[in-house]
Length: 421
Image (tube, rainbow, N blue to C red; front, top):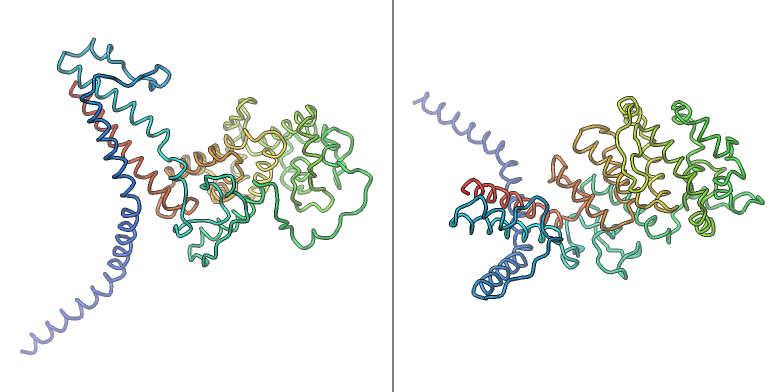
């Protein structure tokens, strides 16, 4: 009897221990299932509606004698035409081949327009809705840093960090309507005769301050001097001026008049391009196309990547460079540079200490909204843990995940049909 009681008591203790261990896991799974269920309910209605509409459209066309017009311009590259399929298939397989072609064309057309303007619209109740990010707004009247909501502070550290960065990037993208300068910059600058110091510096009419270096000397004497470029902190505000102050109190912020004259001055823009190449070399990057702004790894990328990864103040410098490119005539250079850093950090696993800055700052410096959306989608699909991706509303993430799943299913189905042919 004593042995039996002891054994039963042990069993009870073991059961209690298992319950305490399993409860957090069960609770986590339950919350995840509830969240997934809410998301499915939110997106299922429009998806089902579009699916039924597409099915109805196909059935009505099936009995019609007319055929939709097609164009070689809309034909996906590498897709076999019906005649080519007919040349290698028997009569019974010819219909299957045509079906593959039609499905592929229809899918790629949907993929290019997978999110309409209305589908980009995000509710303020979205888990990762950021009131400082206009990336997902669809009407010009809505854009601006003045659209605010009274959302409580999130408990997600990454999202809160992104939200703080988004305020700065939103203000930049909309021409600095808000004065968010630190208190020390509210005092008036010292009087000087030069009312266009940044433009005159880039025209070679004055030197930087306090270093006293002219633009041509920067380009000829500082190129490849990596120690100087790393440890001197007063030149970056002159090479890449902005409408916001930096750490150099002797530098001046850009004025609207300077920007207008800069954009119409070929010499100033050419010198800015040379300054960009100088800093790219410092970071181990090479500009391989001056028309498109495409970049690639330079020959010394390993050594320069090590320096970039160990000196994180360069993240601020790169953010400034991206902003300056968008302000002074090279906005089309922004997306290629950001795409380069996304590939290096998310795909190649390089620059781990640059990764967060790429996602919170570099990416949202891109002025072109379409390019910015494409870059965010690339970042989301390449992110190692998508459940921790906070730089995009959940609604958009779900749609991208569904689109990728449908694409994979379509590819597998197409491959299966081709195997049968």
